[in-house]
Structure formats: C-alpha cells, structure tokens
Image (cartoon, rainbow, N blue to C red; front, side, top):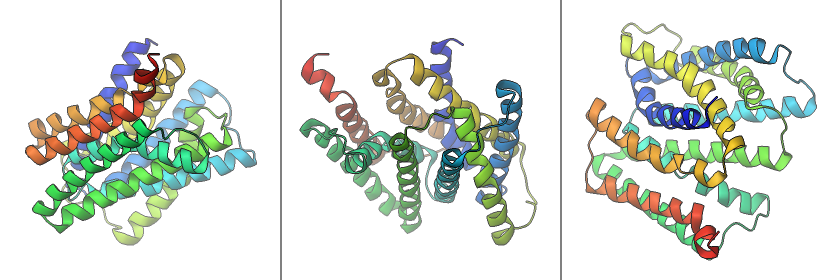
Length: 292
C-alpha cells in the first residue's frame, strides 16, 4: 500500500469520526450508536483476522492481559466520548483529542521515567491546557451540559493515553489488528450489557445518515483507521506522523461548521490555535533547538 494514501486515509477517518459520532447517536441514542459500532467492528475485525492472519490470534497470558487493557480502554474511552458528544460540537471533540500526544507524554514521563519534559515541551503543555481552558470558558457560556460534555471527552483522552503508555511499558509485540480484535472481544459484551440495562430497546426513529454513520465508524473508525495508523508509523518518522494530530482538528472544525451548522467563534479559534501551538512546541521543540 502507498504510504501517502494511508496517510491521507488516516487524516480523512480521524477528521470525520467526531461528526459521524454525533450523527450515529443523534437518532438512535448514544448507547445504541456506540454498541452497534463496536459490534460491527468486531465482526469486521474477525473477518480480517481470518483473511489476513489465517490463524487464531495469540492467547497466552500476556496477550490476554493486553486484550483486557485494550478492551477496558475502548469501553471507557468510547463510552465517555459518545456520552459527551450529546452536549458539545464535533469540532470540540476533535480539538480536545488533539491533546492526546501531550497527555501521553506526561504519563510516559511519570510512569516510564522518560526524560521527555524539557522546558520548551513544558511550555507546549502549558499552552495546550490554556487552550483547553479557553474552550472550557466557551462551554460555560453555552451551559453546564457543555462543560460536562468536555469533561467526558477529557476522560476519554486520559483513558486512551493510559492504554498507550501501558502498551509501551510492556513492549507489546502483537499486531494492530490483533490488539484491535482482542480489545473488541472484551469491550463488545460490556457494551451490549450496558445498552441492555440502560436502554434495551430498538430505536424507533433511525435515519439513513445515522445508520450510515454507524457502519462507517464500525468499519473505518474502529478497525481500518487503527490499522492504517500503525502502518504509516512503521514506514515514516514520528514527527511526520504527529502532523496528523495538527491537521485533523482544523478539518473537523470546518466539517462540523459545513455539515452540522456548528458555531465557530473567537473563543473556539483561540483555544484551538493555542492547543495546536502547544502541540507544535511539544512535538518539534527538540528538533528546532538542535537543528536536526
């Protein structure tokens, strides 16, 4: 596969995911939307395992532990972001998720003792969280529900970063497909149980847009996007991969504005620019200072 096409594919999938999350939960309810998405993702990943691996996924003690952590992260992170999507715009979701590299870096420094928090990177962290504060101030103007929605997405970022650092600590050798499939095997029963207990009924009003969004997220958002990301990570340097997290929030903001009538005001742009500036400092400060 062309690395350039895979790169573009990740940008498209990550940019459209927040908007389709809102669409998938709009008619049927967020619980049905996320549960149906993950069930489709599990079925699709099972098909890929049979076609690509042509063998059973590893099932030793470390593999089972990996699937458990991945499954808990998928369950907690996605449930949080779907719940929060009821109250905030898709653009907010994407911008907040842009903080993921910074949060992961902080956790790696604390948990893995990585010497990654240089003074310039700390400046990047500060800028990123100042930007998040600006977006929070905008949410306060909108209402308390928006603040709760942003807090839920922040929780999702924390869970996602925690799982990434955990995998790095154990130096997991499993493929992206195996981790994804194993994680879905753990999380899907949890989603089904949650949906059955809290909702338990088939949605009465279900639009084609909502159904299409669920199918799209189940196949592309849950499986293909993850596989493409790991593919490009193996073929190009990390600094160019990290550009994706700078591009997708801006694209997602415009998509939300164009297709979902989401508001773009001064606070939104100021917070977004501060977060992107902070991420730039965090990602490339060492290269700028050393000239390498």
